[in-house]
Image (cartoon, rainbow, N blue to C red; front, side, top):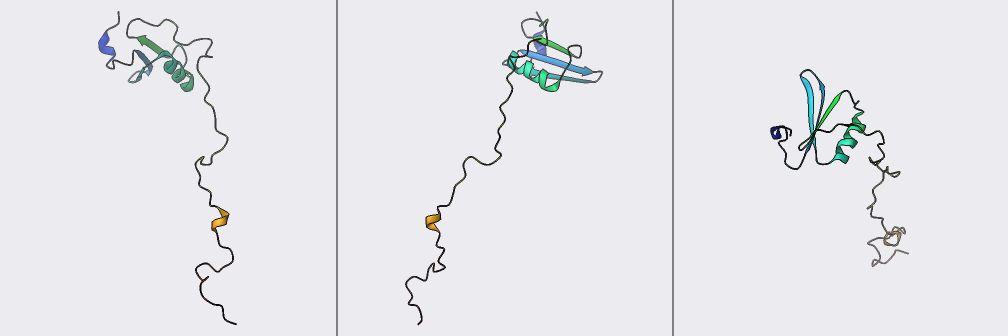
Length: 106
């Protein structure tokens, strides 16, 4: 059993350590999926990392088959999806806006 003082967050049982010397980074994860996603995004190598679970030590830190990690969908449009369009019927293009009640000079 691993020392529970290494896990200060009750809902995050996965601990990832990487780095050298004084520059050691420690991250906590809620589930294995988030851990594997972080490892693949940061391109960490098996020799560089140490993974611990609150209840047991994990022996295989990086899965060979990483199909479990979903690739994010990318949006093709950068525009806002909630745009308001002006109705062209509301626009007065005759140039007489506000002057409809005045008689015209002859």
